[in-house]
Length: 332
Image (cartoon, rainbow, N blue to C red; front, top):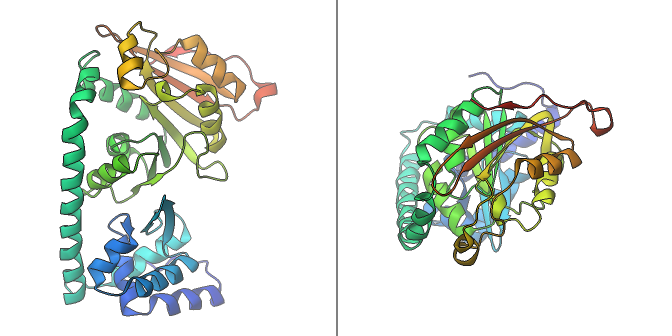
């Protein structure tokens, strides 16, 4: 592995000064394993919380770590893309993984992951029956996931965004198709479960954070593919959700929506908090057009009594005023 070039002399000196301390190197190595909170890092390092917070702040200041807030909690991780991510991973690569301190830190991290998994299992044990009720009403989940994979396999995906990520299943499903994947969800319980799932091998380039689908925490376009998997029926303003997702897509980027066709099951609204009884393709297409999203493909997965729909839209790089009508096709 080569040191990434392009850093100015002053900036490089600042990065090296900051990283050149034992506890900060330990923090880098830990945060490369996934999102960790201040309290979790304090437990692992056996230091005071103010001391750990100071080290974390210094690493964030030079770009070797990123911080995101979830209510009263703050989580830290190594950037997954960009110049500073390469520098952080170069430094971590230089560490001896058999060093006694590094080995002890990883052992304590495993204990924390076990605690996370136990809490997630309790949450799912409590809520799984409700989700199973809905799954029993449509085609098998593996058929839906196979269709999603077929859609994604046709695309070049560097940066993936999953809105309403829940347990992080979409990130897991498409991890091997992307270089960088991030999931957004409002529920801290769901994010906790997602972090357990993404702690497994093969998902180090995936991360999750708390956010709202109406105000995504990104200032500018940065994604090649965004997914809304069984999320839109919880939205009271679905057209605004499409507009916000369109805002963070690169020109030419894609949006994949997976949801139900129109149905008459009022119990999903009364008992499962659904706000919309499914969607017509014409509605999705119309909302997309308002935000420079062109419908390019549609697929139906009929079930009893619910039909699952997949809609693929593309952000038109030409702009809304110059757009030509798209030739819509069926997904495979």
